[in-house]
Image 1 (cartoon, rainbow, N blue to C red):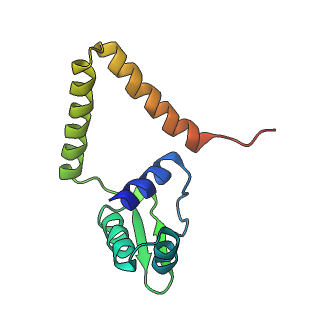
Image 2 (image 1 turned 180 degrees about the vertical axis):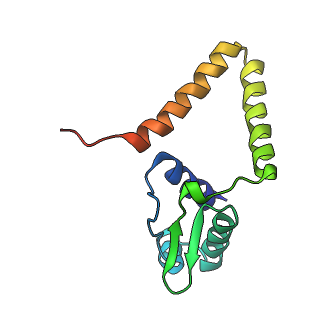
Length: 120
């Protein structure tokens, strides 16, 4: 799940661009000192989630977000996670505005990373 999480995050922040090829399974397994089956399972999860596309003989590539379809189950799971974050914030004594600001700040972090332009 760590591989799935890290690749998903890299995609969300723009570190991995649409169409970019992921490392081959064996190469990534060697780099991370993991069994290739572990990496293959992670790539399978990413494929099932529609985040990557695997082309036989060519490799695994970051899928175009405009072609991804969020299933209602995925949206429900995301809403539950958001509810959990909100509840944790309130339980820590944060105000609704504090939680809102935290979430907006994190969203800006992701969009800033993916929209950064090279210095002139």
